[in-house]
Length: 330
Ligand code: ATP
Ligand code: MG
Image (cartoon, rainbow, N blue to C red; front, side, top):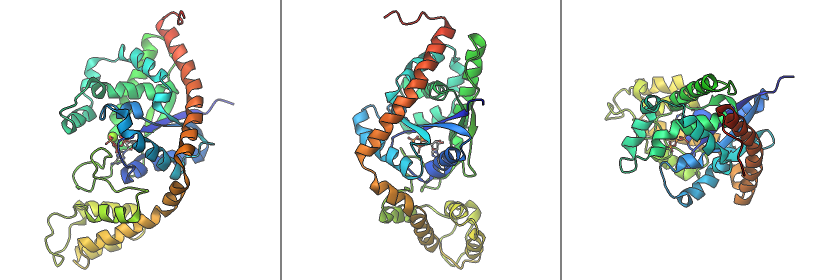
């Protein structure tokens, strides 16, 4: 039997795990894991976190929180390899080898670099610029063929694909050409109603946050800016809250849409209803999360990192040999 194809994806420990992370990526991670058709590798991308926050200690709590949340939403260490990026440091060597075959122009054109540089103008470091090259190394280190991510990552996965193609052509065909896999909701807007929901921007609605925090976050959402009074008909088409109704009320969002159009429901009330639905939907995740201790999370990451590392060592050995480097002399 042919070996199963591999999946790789990761998340940065830069803040609270949110609706966008869940509906854009993690939900798919769990489905792919449970479908049993692939060998799944998922990781907490702490090296990537350093591009935003130079002191890893400052995001250590976020790291365990994020890992715990990922386990709570259904990643099962018995079915997936769940690991910590920096505990598999071979990725740094593959990143270096890839950087030699990555044209400057490819990286320069990455849309996310421009966006992140705008978000952190005082810290536009080389790591931020080289981010997609490290991401290509993340994926190809485990020979990932599919990458379940939100829409904002499509350009990066496309670049990983080009990197694999180029490496294979210049040296030897050892890498698959990865493709991204998206959900029906590849881009969830933030509570500001303008930018993508992002951990590092803080414009989030959490998944395992306490109910009172979720309520507050939802009630802070920017809604229909054209509607000043409840007596005016709303414009659900351009309302962020309404797009979340499609996610959380797949069967009766149309009913709320009509009420809004007829000015029979106000934005505040719609947000209250939505908040309760979010709290209720994620209750099982919150429960599972509260059962997990930091020690248990660390043990899962340790075991996963050991498994990922076995694969990584072999890939880097192959890549070095393809490049023509001598095996390490010592
Ligand atoms: P940061 O602000 O640090 O970049 P983030 O919220 O963008 O954090 P990432 O760790 O960069 O989260 O991304 C983790 C996964 O979640 C990726 O697959 C990404 O595409 C997906 N994702 C992130 N935000 C959204 C969103 N708003 N809608 C859909 N998918 C998202
Ligand atoms: Mg991001």
